[in-house]
Structures are given as C-alpha cells and as structure tokens.
Length: 174
Image (cartoon, rainbow, N blue to C red; front, side, top):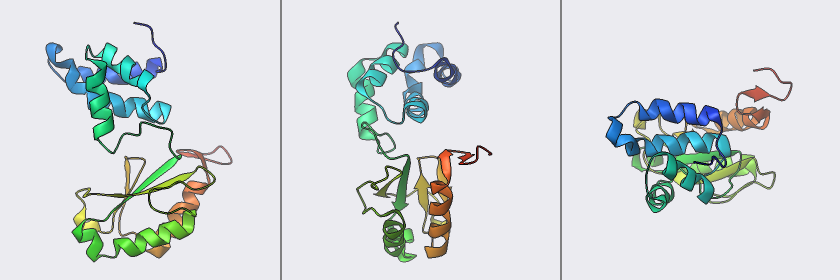
C-alpha cells in the first residue's frame, strides 16, 4: 500500500481502533478511522477515503458512503472551527435560535456559511444527548459547550480566535 496523505501517527491510532474488533472485522473501525484522519487532514478527501479503504480492506465506495452520510465528516475543506448548535426541541426551548443569532454576530457568518477569515463555520445540528445542558454547541465534533447564552458565546469565540492551533495560544503556550 502506498500511503498518500496520512501520517504514521494516524496509522498507529487507527491500529488501536482496529485492535478493538475481531481480526476479521477490522472494517468496524471505519468511522473511528475517518475521525482520526479528519483530525489530521481537516477533511476527508477522496484520496483519504481510498487510503482508509485500502488499509481496512474495504471498497472505496463503502468508505465514501460513510464519510458522506454522517455530518460529523467534512468532504471538502472547512473552517478551522466548525461550530454546530443543537436546535432540537430541548435546546430550542432554551433559546437555541437566539444563541445561533449571537454566534452569527460574533463570527460574522450566517448558519451554513463560513466567516471571511476562514476561522469559523456555523451549522445547525440534531440532538447531542446533553439536553439538560441546553442549549448545546459542538466545536470540531469533539468539544461540547453547555448553556450557551450570549456571554458564554462571546467568551468562547474570543478564546477560539486566540488559538493558532487547537490547544495552542498565539504566544505558543498551552
């Protein structure tokens, strides 16, 4: 197999996921593999789909179907911070639509679009399973923020703007 896009670290993490399943069921690690790859590459392009398919002994179309079905995967370049606000009933009852408008104002982008600086994209999402914490915001599919009112949104956007890379501040400290 010729590795095209993914680093050895990604393959090590994928191997840990594969080890969770019986030897003849390594395809079961496809969703985890896509998530790991996306963290490194930023999105899942067709080359990455083919690479994962080959590594997991799957048909490339099967990997593509999974990558394009779940909204946690991006199949084209996206903003650095993908923000998804839950707008299901419990969050809606706790002013999720108002929170969306606050986020739009803070990042300068509407729902379904990206900020001009490329830092943020904003989306509506379905239930994240944290209804008691409504309204809930998910950033980059792995960091959940609860009780998102105007003040919390402003603080979060300010913090994200101050990161060069996830976990690293502009001054290089963590």
